[in-house]
Image (tube, rainbow over all chains, first blue to last red; front, side):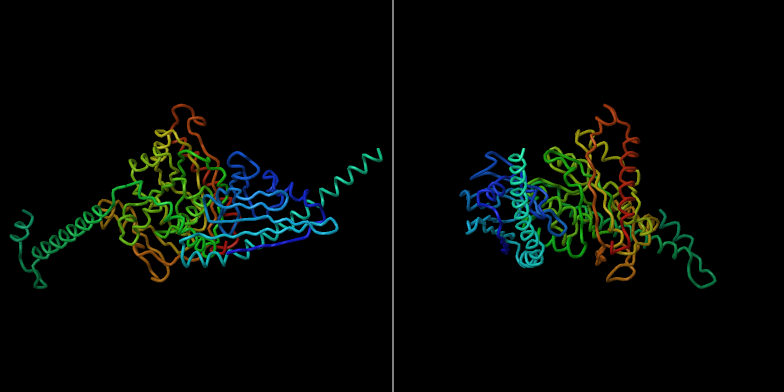
Length: 160
Length: 312
């Protein structure tokens, strides 16, 4: 099952990238995520491993994921090593007028689980879709708020 | 000898029957019943598989996670809190209160939560009554890491570095009447404390609520179990009587039942290092009281959150 969500962020692509590529900040904007912790070195970049858990239904589901694509400032993709099968991708694109197009894709399932797996994927989809949509929206709000604060701080510094 | 005496006293009574012969026949029936029960007990004992920890199959568990998720999320609306209290690695003794009769919904919800939180790669065993593992239809439980409840199996599981879930109250607690649903009753069993001390592992109490609302449990049927010698033959202290789907009046619960969709909430408490908390030679009674009191307080808090039975 694959779900995705996208948004336009009023901020330069580098600023958005600095947040999505930093594992320490994942819990600040990832909706439904209860854990996003570094599982091994390197902590950022290709081959970085994280332990990621999402709250879906009555369980925290996830496992250890590994970053398999890391192309600043556009693409960050991961795939699962343990736990349920999952592939995720942040896709950033520079848009005119200083905007950034942000898309989060998440594909998940359990190979070999048969009919129950097929059913569970579909029943969980609205929750997972809500988490993905919420994550993109929270990321947009976070980036824009931080940008606003930086500008305000710069104004205060210039005035002082 | 008994047979010769009764045969020798046989005189017809007023009803035209012979009292001695009647008593002899009763004795013969009792003897036959006893022999049949003993034969059944032997048969079941032979069926109990020797605990092989290697039978646990992570791939099998992983492939069943969606089914467990469906049952736990939709039927029981399961909620498991505080899994972060369980140490991330190493052996640990998880001590739970047991509810829900032979269907044990709390085990399903907790096993799913543990397996998804720590991953199926972390070895996790559960102790179950011998009879459960002897049931031909439940052989797949061994692939989940369920082993027969015995001190040696528990020891081996912890020595292997696994997390081990035990229900000290066992069949006594799991079949308690519904009116006692919010009561921790481990029946004074302290073997789990000896085990934790012997293996020097922390105890993590796991408290669940809702399981005893999946049927109307009327009585443990202890007297009935004793009369039928189930305690001596099958280690069964109870012969529970309940009202459950689809049977109506359900005696024994041997075939299980369709559990009502009661909301199951489970709270995992912080680990207890017995020697750190109670000194180098802890008193078993003191530890038992501490753990059961802690579990009862948690259960009371969970019960206070609950607005309606079954619905949660």
